Length: 185
Image 1 (cartoon, rainbow, N blue to C red):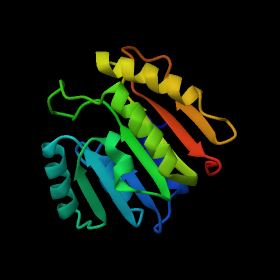
Image 2 (cartoon, helix red, strand yellow; image 1 turned 180 degrees about the vertical axis):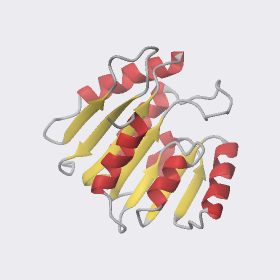
Image 3 (cartoon, one colour; image 1 turned 30 degrees about the vertical axis):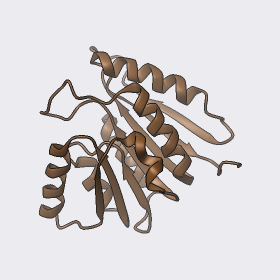
């Protein structure tokens, strides 16, 4: 079986083409950004930490990838950028690996960002959320995300939960959302 992040990448790769646009809602060390940049037309990435943006810029340069635009901003501000027709979105929540563990994604801004992300997702697009409930804020965030996605209209979205249920210490898991049809205004 695939690990959670590998499965998230597979779900995205299954629907993405070289003509698509994607958003990495939590750039971090740039792994997801680079993965997406190798398979789509353009990636937009958000992070609140300058260190994450700088690391990712360097990694993109090293990989000779120039189809990425990075924003030093909170993903909760997504709607102010006017994105539409996005085919793939990834949230890799928690804190920056090897960074300050006190700086972590927050339930309230993540839910706001998720609402906005689903609005700009095009039909058949996929949004994946890798969730880390093993720390206090991550546990709270996981509960609020699950509550939010359980209320999504099943005629408009399919929601999948992928988790290893026999592992100790609250391992990471995945919530994947596919948009079935455009929203009715």
